[in-house]
Image 1 (cartoon, rainbow, N blue to C red):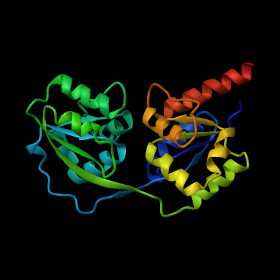
Image 2 (cartoon, one colour; image 1 turned 180 degrees about the vertical axis):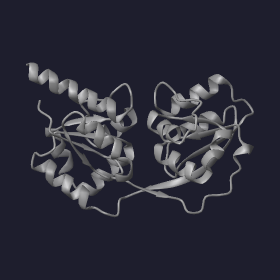
Image 3 (cartoon, rainbow, N blue to C red; image 1 turned 90 degrees about the vertical axis):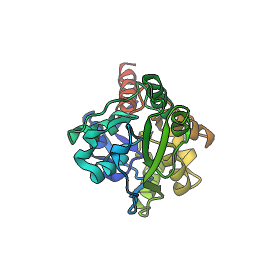
Amino acid sequence: MSIKRVAITRPVERSEDTVRLVEERGWEAVIVPAIEIVPRADLPDIRLKDFDWLVITSASGAAIIYERFGDGLKDIRIAVIGPKTREVFEKEGISVDLMPRKYRAEDLAEELLKIGIRDKKILVARASIGREVLVDELKKQASVDEIVLYDTLMPKNKEPIRAFGHALENGKIDAVIFTSSRTVKNLFELAGGSLKENLRDVKICAIGPITAKTLVELGVRPDFVPEEYTVRACLDALEEVEHRGRKE
């Protein structure tokens, strides 16, 4: 297997590090913005001092909450799902107190319940569309408030999706990394009925089991679902297969 071009379903504004990771391996990154992040303009008034924990579920959410509260975030304990979200805070000098070993909502809830949050007040800040498991689990012990930071919408600019479809159809994409269930659903809706057929000729990596499940439901079985739910881990899996192919 020879890899030259890797497509990643990621918003353009969060793609800089992804492009770097791909190019470090000598490949070309094709960013496919299958969702558009739109921050809410009407965030409610929130006093962080009223809460014991702030829970953030994405890097986009971390950036938005930092823009709102800045160094005020140093006065509250913060829990995040994964390393990209943690990096957003750490680049601004904000410490993160908890990140689960597996980057899933279920695991974050489990870790918080383990350390003891009974009767604590928790603020969960996230997208308008998201799985309810995190909030449902935390409510078993704590008082939980939610704040919607942003909406994940269909991208207004469809040209990158069309360009990706043409490249895939013409054999100019070697692998695709799907980074969320929402990007899978949007891409299938936008790219047309030929997408499923065209994906058969490339390696497919789903960033985690929820994304993989969505792909399977749409008739596409991913080749890889890494144990660590990151783009880097997906790229590592692709690189390992490429090296194995060269040896054979």
